[in-house]
Image (cartoon, rainbow, N blue to C red; front, top):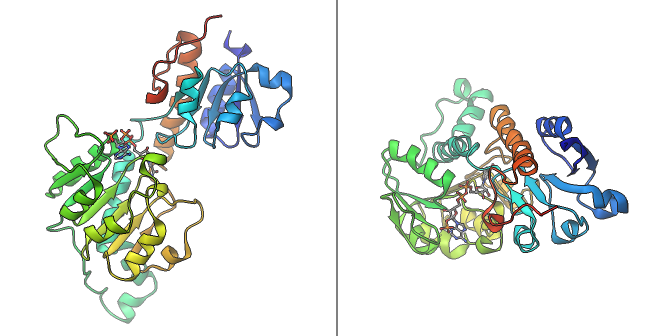
Length: 323
Ligand code: NDP
């Protein structure tokens, strides 16, 4: 009977996920992922976590009967999945259900950046169309651009499909070439940047991509370069990006993600040639509901059948403990 199983929710979680889990399990809530907020008998009861918040090794280790961490979102750099895998704890994320939504947002952000649509709208609303005249012609266009994608995974490929239809040539960098696509592969990010003028980052966060988009990459992208980040803020050296925008090393940037959200560096806030969004890649009622369902479904499948729907790669071999 699943209503005997305790699922702990530290911090915030989508209300639909909370509702689904409360209907199936015994749900316990605390303000943040801090084991000091739980008594010993409560810590021993917890068998599953449903999280959007940072979930580190110490927190998982303080829960002796923890079997599974179901994380909300496809990126799970906030969960120490390597530690979980090494200790027989399953981790799940929410891939696929958000892929097309995030790709739509990426293309919108790219067009906003290149064609300055948010600024053109502000021009109208400020009465300048009637008062001053037409919005100035944009320096930049998508026409003739060459697109490079950093991270040609599920979302990267969905972005590439859209931009193919725009008539733009696509190349990419990831650690390995992707089978079954005929986009041009470059084995390093600098080489990719050197060969394109439009770089879209949709790579995951974490140590392997930390500040990968640095001064050298931005210089290689060049003076007509446009950089769009819809992946993780941690993949960018934000100081180098702000400097490159200020001194014309690149032309413009569109950013949905930042290194220290919700704080955006002052230099980026002030950059006229940057189009900024508050991490809205998947942020529709429709898609967030699907993500919430997948969090709940992963926990239900684990406790009913011993196999979640979407395990992360670090824990794909973790099996249900014998009891
Ligand atoms: P996938 O795992 O399908 O794709 C990730 C891609 O990145 C793969 O092509 C992978 O290839 C590549 N990659 C991973 N590590 C590296 C590395 N160190 N160097 C170079 N390439 C690397 O993930 P999704 O497409 O589903 O999602 C991608 C990311 O997008 C998420 O992790 C999340 O951070 C972000 N995201 C942002 C959203 C937003 O709201 N802005 C919404 C949803 C996702 P390989 O392993 O061969 O290197």
